[in-house]
Length: 261
Image 1 (cartoon, rainbow, N blue to C red):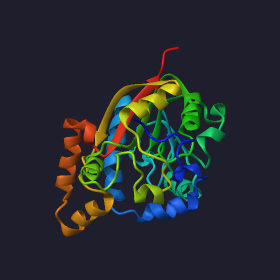
Image 2: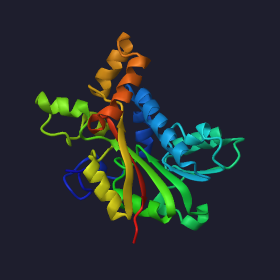
Image 3: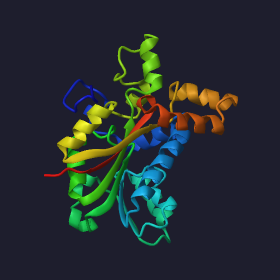
Image 4: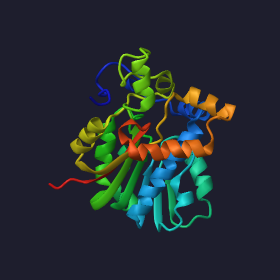
């Protein structure tokens, strides 16, 4: 199984996204800063392994990558949310080789950004847009033959989802959680579903894995942090565990390449 299709059952992503509300809700999420830190660590690791000269980041949120990638000669950020784009511009002030564009990837001509890029990053984004196929086809236009596209999304087979099914709290691991509805997300991916969407846009998965084995939902994880039980060392251990048990990590990542035609 894969994530719900955009024309499938009504979910949060079937209606136009309210980006202003998304920005507000994002700032209120429990545990998300810690989850985001683990996610970012993996993204940076994969980008550094690619060693791109030119990087395109699509959807930077509150923490654009360029602040931790001083060796990349040129970085372009495409961010449709006004508040996030404004914050990225402020962070880019004085940074050489960084350009922030407030726009959707689907609405920008590749020539305007000097495509192709050596690497493209879509971090925590594909599951939030109403039409992932359109986004991936737009991304393909920014790619050359050797471009690597790094994508990460929530993993439908995360341990906390498997546990919820085992407890009878939800019928299956693909059910939308209250947090997903709050954040206007349209669904959750497994590896087969993500591979299929990438393949339809002209990509093949070269590498994959997960991050952070997360036993419980965000709210319960935050309670463990607040109690002092869930320490930084324990979080690092749960993240390392995802390398040994990649099927059950909380977020799925892939490095995709342009398919041979």
